[in-house]
Length: 274
Image 1 (cartoon, rainbow, N blue to C red):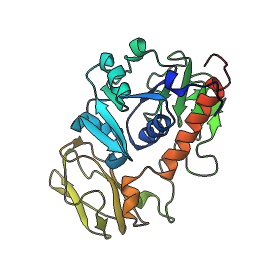
Image 2: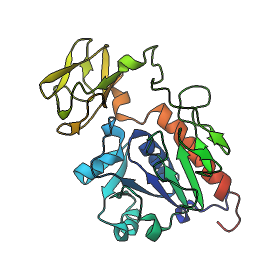
Image 3: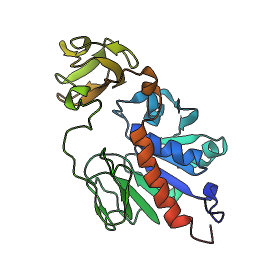
Image 4: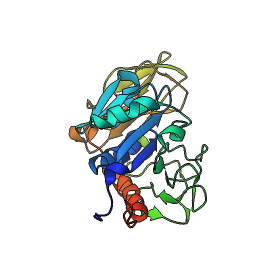
């Protein structure tokens, strides 16, 4: 790292607290940046054990040794930073950026479309995945599609379009996903970290049972009690069957986080005033 960059002087606002966003927040926090996360009132994170969005429900949570704390407003952010934690705010529009004045905004909502992020939101704006044009909607875009370009930082153009098909794990794509069989409150039968076999019942929605399509470990599962829409992704089975993968940040999230870190260092690491 360039010796001219004092990371603690660079504030980074990460929009979204799901697993990929949390991988970004975790890596930047570990690198010394002051990171704040904004979320919606009822996050729908599937990989909850590695998502800082859980702080919205629990008041606090930890991902690989890094603690996040829910705060009521931007006036509490500095206190949590000084405690060495990541503050999380329920602020869907990231309006707190007007008072926090971050040097960097990272759109990690992964909505596949731009929901309002502008390159004017901060001196440096980095967006993850499709739906953004680098150099227009954001200064940089990071590729999120698995493959050769995963984590690549783009200064112009678009990330690969969403195909609707998840990246293959041991050759398995769509069958890895668990989707709600109906609309209504989700009730789980098994939990994250449990091993399942093809045909096992995972949970129910309005009396309709969701079954596993493959053997593996349940890597992600939406919070029980949340009202889901039919077809919504609510779980993820990992055919590799390694339970520890359920509780650690994925290689995909860390690769994307590396792209974000590169964007920050390209921008601030070369400026002698930092």
